[in-house]
Length: 277
Length: 277
Image (tube, rainbow over all chains, first blue to last red; front, side, top):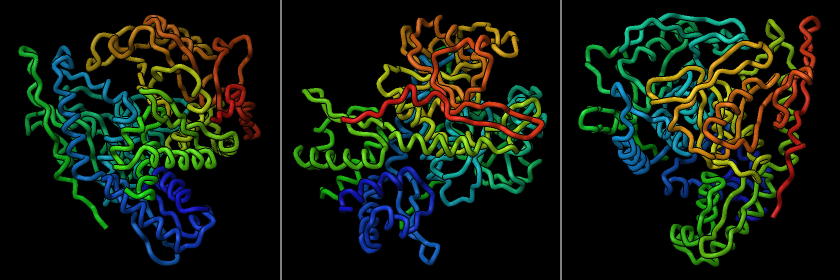
């Protein structure tokens, strides 16, 4: 195989298999080329990925070694993406009765959802994560986007059990802002005991839902290593029940009367550090 | 920019922007290279994508022309993916009380979900589709996977209205197999009138849910151009209310007593034709 063909095939393979160890012999066999040529190709690809700010190739040496594509977004890419998102969210047409904000249209765009996933994966790339957990419904696409970059499965907590999921574990919890009692269920066979979990959701106010998920995950002896929310709403500090989380944007001052919203960067950059080899 | 760098950067760009027209001047500027060089690069990439069976580059000539990556899976790739899926589903451990089949674990794997999306996108690549519609909850990841390859947004039909979505349109419908009355809602601003819609869901028995979605979409004067379900269950012919659909697998004979299931290829290949330039 010629270098030009190898570069196309290997770039495609690495992008489709993020956070996954690929051995040099595998590429060598697939591309029908010497390991030395494959190594040179990987150097070119790595340099290029870094230049584009889409991550880097991590080399793992030894007999079980190889190369792993870590899809870490550059600081510049993260900043410009979050800036655009804030601008889009500040559109006064998004204000709904009750001071809520219409965000569904943004979450309906697969490419936007994928980029949000890339952001979280960048912030969490150094953490141990076995599975991404979210609660139905709006967090689901975000959870899949994060999980695809981290190369781990997704588990979805439901509000109601379904017959097609077998036996379940359920808990009741109090919603942080509305103080209502709600239920959450997780099929018994969906999560292994002691799993390291990343919780993803679209929105957080006081954090009652995320706290509920944590209580449910306790039943599985799971360890929550990361919590990521797309948008956090301003809330009285004393009401907040979740304190350790990563948010991409923060929604402030939804002013119904004057039709104004203020959307700022969340605490994302407190949890983000640019990785380089 | 050197050819090797261009090939990596352009391959990445095309894979991240499927079904999207990219102009030659755009690449020429981004890569700081002559259009003739870019054309040669695209020929190499196109040849390679076809060889890997992951699609092809469509050239659109004229002033508004350029190149579009059509992510069409080859016949061979589709066959081997569906074969593996059938084998995994035939595991007797999946049989749940009531003759249901546990499939959540497969739908929890982002890479598997992405490949299912690729399959549907291959079957539907010649159809006009403006938006992918699904119903909460299990169809959501599949819908996003299909939509990402077709480069269109996703709209999610819910069982219950949410305050954060504004005014909604709702319908009641009768579930095909259980004969229960159920409700479906869609926010008014989520869909444009006259949109061409692809419906995606994880499972279909009689087809009541999909028929319900069609009735709801009628209220938006939408045109359903494709229906895709991951798994269809054997059902008495006279009970089935949806007849035109594409299924990836067909589940037959869930035999609780002898712990046996038969899972076969669905009607996928009736709707699939291999595209070549």
